[in-house]
Image (cartoon, rainbow, N blue to C red; front, top):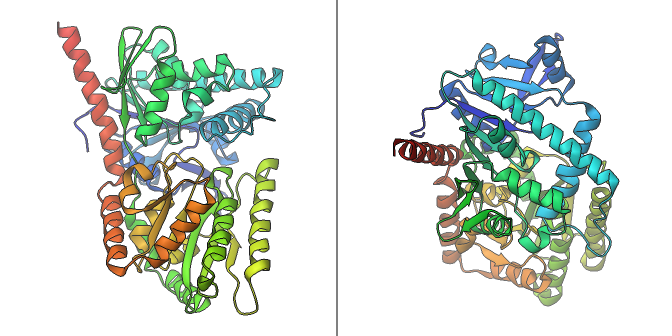
Length: 495
C-alpha cells in the first residue's frame, strides 16, 4: 500500500467497532460500516497497528473496566490489530462532543449560523472549550503512551474535527512523532472563521499545525485552512507549494479525496431483498422518470431547498407534471437537537405543500420515506434518472459516488459546487449553486432532457472516476506523505 514501514496508530472520536452483549451475554464487537473503516482497518492489519477511540457503548466501557488501559486485541475476533478505548466522563464528553465539536466546529465549517441571531459565546462556551481541550489532551497522552510501546517510531493518522488539537499536544509530548491529520468536513474560509472566539480559532489552527501532513478532500478546503493559518504570527503559508512553515518545521497540506468501497455495495445490490425492493420501486414509479435523493435530516444537506427547486421546475415546465416523481429517502439525525427536529419538520412540510399544490389522485410529485434504510437506498440508486446532491457545504459527500456505481439507467448527477465531491466529479455532473432555486430547477430540466448518448458518456465518466480511487489508495497516499516527511527529516539530520 505504501513505502512507509512504521507501525500505524489511528485516532478518531468513534472507533471501528463497538462492543455489545450477544445472545449469551458475552461482549462481541460490531463493526462500523463504510469505506473509511474498511481502509483504515486494512492498513492497521498490515502493521498489527492500533486504533484509539472514545468508549461509546456500555460494552466499550466494560472493556475499559476489565483492562486498565481499555485495550482489546482484535485478533481474538479474527483481525490482527488492536483497539484502545478511552473512558471519558459523560459530562466532559457531552461538552467536547455536543457543545464544541458539533455545536461549534460543525456549524462554523458548514456556514450554518444565522449570524444576526447566533452564535453568542459566553461562559458556557469557555467551559465547553476547556472540556474539548481536556479530551484532546487525553487522546494525545494515550497516543504518546501507545507509541512508546511500539517496536519502532509509529506513524499517527488522526481523524477529523473532533481531534483538532491532538496534533499539537502530541507534538509537545513527542517532538519527533510522524503525525498526519485528516479533515473530513469542509473547512471555513478565513473571514467566516473569525466568527469564533480568538482562543478557539487560534487553538484550532495551531492545533492542526502540530501535524507533519494535513489532509483535505478538496482544494477549496485546503486553501481556506492555509489562508487562516497565514494570519497567525510566526506562520508562513506557501500556497504555491502547498506547505506551511511554523516553529522551524514544515507542514505539508495535501488534497486526498476519499472514495467508496464499491464491492460491498454491489454485493448488496445483487441480494434477493434488494432485487425485490427494486421491483417494488419500479411498480411504484410506473412510467414516470425518477429523481432520487438519499440523505440524513442534516442541516447541511439542503433538503428543503431541493424540494422548493423541484416545485419551481414543475412551475416552469408544466409538461413534466404527471411524468416525473421525486423520491426522498431521509433518515433521522440528531433528533435530540432542537434545530435538527425543526429542520426535519420544515422539510416534511415543504414536501406536503408541493404535493398539495401539484398532486392529484394517481400522482404525487414527492414521496418522502423517513427511515434508516440501507437496502432501500441501494435499490433506489439503481433506478434514478436524476440524483439530487445539493448540500450547502459538504466535506466530500459519498452519495454522489454511491449512486453512479449502482445506477442502471445512465442517471445524471445534479451536484452542488460546494460539495467536496464536485472537485473530483464535477466535469461529469450538472453543477449547481445550492442557494439558487432557479439554477437547480434548470439543472433538473437539463438532466431529464439530456440526450441519451450524453447521459451515457457522463455516467461512464462518473463510474470510472469513483472506481479509480478506492479508499485503500486514500490511506496509502497519506502514508506516502508521511514517508516523504520522514525522509526529509533524515536528510536534514544527515546534513
